[in-house]
Image 1 (cartoon, helix red, strand yellow):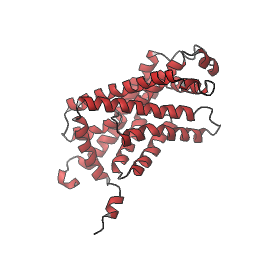
Image 2 (cartoon, helix red, strand yellow):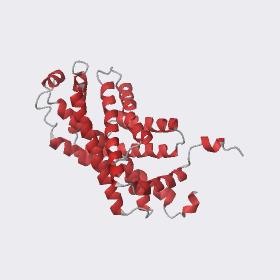
Image 3 (cartoon, rainbow, N blue to C red):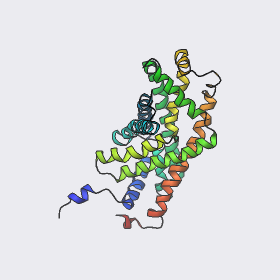
Image 4 (cartoon, rainbow, N blue to C red):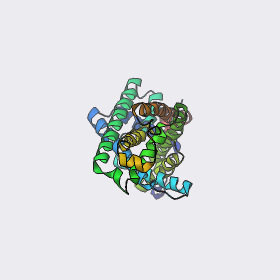
Length: 285
């Protein structure tokens, strides 16, 4: 019997659930050094996507929706690099909850994984901020790129805690659904298309991703130190006040909590209840 149809078809949702559970066990058991390196890489990858987004959103046309969509597609680069080239991303690792709920991963292991990956992602993003600053990237297009970076970070730092939290929920629901569809894919092309629409959607709709914000807000803080960029932006010192450590923390904490709720509960636990809860292992094979 030909296997061509089986090869071409995506994995079923039930098969994906079993796959996510198995991969969750593997992720939770990843040794320290590979985990940290992959986490640093993922933080840098998301930052590269954010850089691409910043360039695309510099001097956009009046076509607001189309410009946002194009920027979102550009931002998808970071997630493509994570899922195809390889990386450990905190928001995607919220899916490990499926293995935890099934009793295959201890609470200690999942919290250790999340903590190390979160720290590694943050360091990867901040290292990229430093490298971008020293590269002169913000001075491109007569400081227009720097102005865009400044305004993006300022918008995020100016959100209220409730806005940041809810936008974080929506964001990671879409990120984890993108990861879910990647696990359903059989080819690199499948994975690219699985990533583009959910990721570009969350970016276009202005939702909040904690790791991306660990690059975007510090990048804006750095841009605010350049008098030429500030002058080109036309923003006053009072308007730039949210761009400080307090503004960063006040965004990152609620966004992180929202990301966990959106990914671990609204996606991982929902699919756990549907496909894994109360079912024997053999039923999923």
